[in-house]
Image (cartoon, rainbow, N blue to C red; front, top):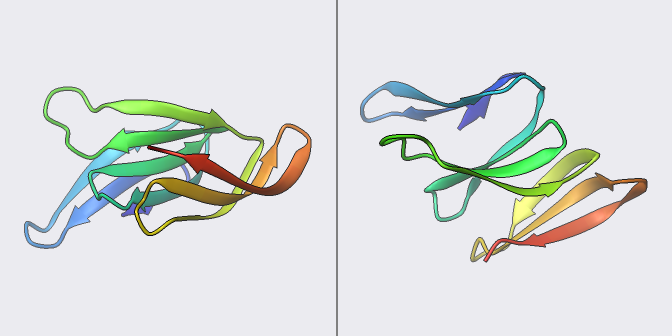
Length: 100
């Protein structure tokens, strides 16, 4: 998984191919694998989204939550909870978001 300012992509080392998950009009603040490895968390433009890596047909993406600033992040061992540092509205702190 890698990203530039406005694009998120994956690399398949077996096939030696790059698959673009999304191009965004706002800067990408973060991108991380969601532990089940079928989804990627993409934080851009003040919205954190779960983006499906399977692109058969149209790629599915779900808006999870809005933020003002998104910094460091990590998932719990089961991949059910996202923990992140940042700001929501005017409040800065450490946050958690339950995925499942």
